[in-house]
Amino acid sequence: MRYTLLDRITLLEPGKRIEAVKGLSLSEEYLGDHFPLFPVMPGVFMLEALTQASAWLIRASEDFAHSLVLLDEARNVKYADFVGPGMLLTVRAEILSQDEQTTKLQVRGTVGETTVVSARLVMRRYNLAEKQPSRQPTDMQIIRNLRQLFDVLSTVPA
Image (tube, rainbow, N blue to C red; front, side, top):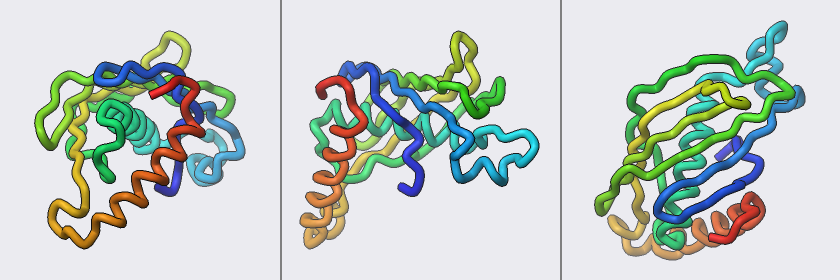
């Protein structure tokens, strides 16, 4: 992932919900182009922050059983306001249901008490070795790297 759009995981209830924050700084690389005279976080990056929080919740809930947790569907995405430099985006995700391959979540991002983005996400989880057993070492390396990043991001135990 090129951009880590979460600074800190502040609350985690495995199998239930997560809360994370992203402090938007004027030094964010993409703000120079979006937009030079009115810098704001792109909507797709807000959605990516919701997706990243959802993936961390799923990984922590399953003790990092899958190397890949990816966005499958984004439904009812609603943008209500801008997020600009100096603002703190708080992201919350709650698991609604789960089957063997997918997890459905209700997610939202807020600045203070104002909801700036909300959606329902469907996340798909799997390992590369499920289709190619020789990729099992790759799965293990990805999971090790994700655990290390989780330890950096999280202020709460998994």
